[in-house]
Image (cartoon, rainbow, N blue to C red; front, side):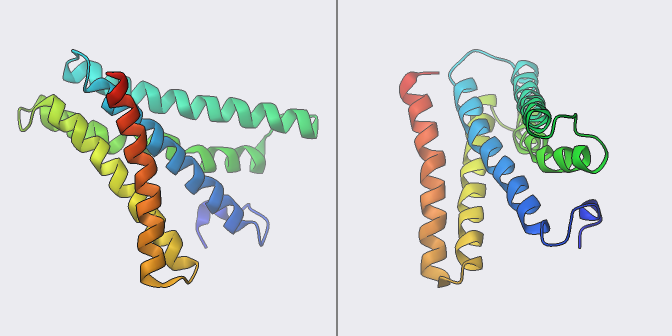
Amino acid sequence: MDDRLADVPPGAEAGVLADRLKERIYATITMIAVVVGLSFVEVGALGAVATVLTTALGLWLAALVADQQAHRTVHRHLATGRELRRMLYVSSPLLSCAVGPSVLIALAALGLLTLHAALLAAAGVCVVSLFLWGCAGGLRMGGGTLAALVAGLADAAIGVAVALVKAAAGH
């Protein structure tokens, strides 16, 4: 078992991991919209990476505020200790969604590719990650390779749809 889950009650590990993965998928879809939107505006590498990082930070803070608000409303006290550690663990993938785009933007800043190409590549990497998560979910459900591929394609289609909507809007 993951040491970070040591304080989670037995049987709840799957729920914690599912919540964590949900946050990662949500952040990935959001990041697709951000990097595609950035590809339509005049922005430098510093502005692009600042936008990506502040988006990830904003998503993470919004999740923590919402989790804390929900917790105190239901339980009549602030989350502390184990409850707070669970919130932090579950929400941390919201921060990690900025890593891939930031690396690609850094490569653009070094002149290894254009910023436009880096932003579109970041969107592509995000779509591929959605495909892979969909495939992994399909395989874990026991549906076989074909079902896993269909699940992966369905998840990737959501990412592509987000990118197309942003592109159609021109921002």
